Image (tube, rainbow, N blue to C red):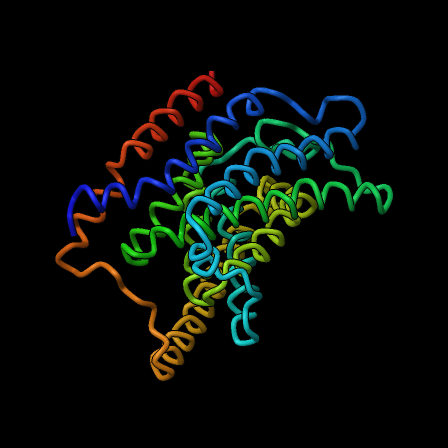
Length: 308
């Protein structure tokens, strides 16, 4: 693999994410949840996702041509992959709660939901109160983010092998949230979603699991926080939560092994386009590409300003 060719071919994904990040800077410092009525805030977030994620992604796909859409594999996962999708969603919920409330001890405002710098007070007094937040804060962001990161970015990096593509796409996924404190959570969530897509061969796996996770954060996460902050039952609660995570992780890995064996028996092994000898060069090309380095710097500056 020639060095200059490798760098050129691997600069597209971080350039796409860098474009999205630049567009995200202004909304990060605005609060759409406080403009006019709640409906206006939800509509603003939907439009924001379409403009910031949808337009650059569509333009990128147009430039790259029809071959990219085929690589993304947007078909729904097969029946044997439904277990992976379900287990991935559950693990996302458990993993995020353990990291947020058990490892990093984040402060939690259970009266509001934050997305891209905006804070929304989600009510459940009527069907409309539930439906609008689910669409605007759970479904649309999940589709937009997964199409970019587990669809385009993960597929574009697949030529470097699973581990490099998963790490790179997960890093870029964490960068666009401009949050130092929650960076590890976004990264590990992204890595888990990449693994699920790798197993099922469908980006829709990540979309479905991400939507389920977002709905849980909207309506269920506050109860986990309340239980975890109760001194009378805190120790028992954490023992149960960690035990559940380990059990589901064990089952998930068991299902993953069965799928991997079935793939091998069917001769459906994922193609590797980079040889072992060229892999290190490809890894260096991914993480030293100019758009990747600029994205890292932009994340550091914006996240620091937002934290002050």
